[in-house]
Image (cartoon, rainbow, N blue to C red):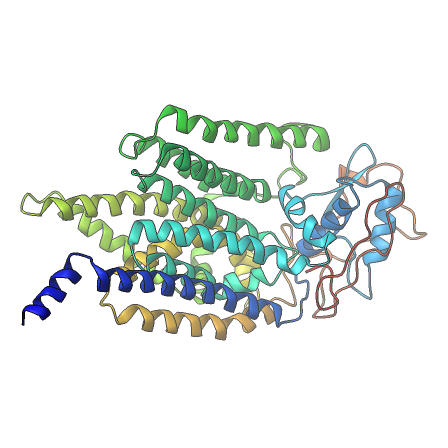
Length: 500
């Protein structure tokens, strides 16, 4: 009897048996999170690639041009690349603009090609979004575990990797969607760990926090509207500075990196577009308005839930957190619970702000109004909402942590199955395409005779568009250097495709 009591007491004090259990539990969490990411990679790589929108062709051309050392192309270089990438009815290049200088450049935000070009040069472009996805999972695991405790990080990673939207855009390597969402996940997780790890060394927290900001800034360079998440992070850090024990010395490099990002983007715009506030998009091409909110609300919620079903869990989590935050003011509530409820409410408010910021912005996006009304356009319209994936996954993971221990694995199994079932239909439904902002248009190339005009076309831009007509093997990258510039030739991605 005394032996049993002694063993029990030792276990309660956290002695041998408890320590062994905790060590094995931590290993199991890592294995589950790694398994979820590996399953995502397999689902992506076993499926042959295809380019679904004009945006794919725009980014592919930018990535290949950058591997040759070019951000802009002369007429001769543009014609060469266009000829090398054009096959059958598919446009070789889409959504590039003709600058007043006579040079050509993609209208897209500039960041993604710089992050994808090294993979293109190695012939492994398909691994680019998966690499950054791995960074996102690492950040989510660290931040989720720090906030939620054991299994919190693993659940967040599983949710992030299981949705059909995540898998579909990880499969599309010539789109920045999964990469910028993954960098947001990495940055969110890193900052969450930094804000909560008050006992960690100041230098370590400074470095991890800086990496978090750099990840969010990199995402913003790929899609400028991701600045919503970056601004939420800045406000959250400033509001929680005292409670998180952040010194001015720790904050200085974080905000210096913000200034550097602003300077780099302003310089890029000034050099290539002729003004610090200009972009490659024409005036009035990207528009937001309150009049688009109600029409988008008619069609978008069903599309979003079908492609990211744990949105429902995240919404329930917000309601539950709100109720608990209200209870935290009760004088009868124990102090430890009061502290936990308020901490969860603060973290949840920051995550909700990032989620609501992205969703609110794009519910007002006028281009998605007619697109969302078409039955086959889901993959074309949900992509704007994917950057909120990390915030939603963390909120849903919080809810799972409140449930009985046996229930989260069952819920996750259902969500994984839903993602596996929805993924093929989401991708296949995108083959007709919906084009980029402005709607679909005819494939474009040089005018008859094979020559481009010496000056810009009317309006100073090349007609956007170029509508893929259906699935087909992707074209290879150029086999040699572009005229007027050297550099390595374009490489094909695994599976004989180079573009996605």
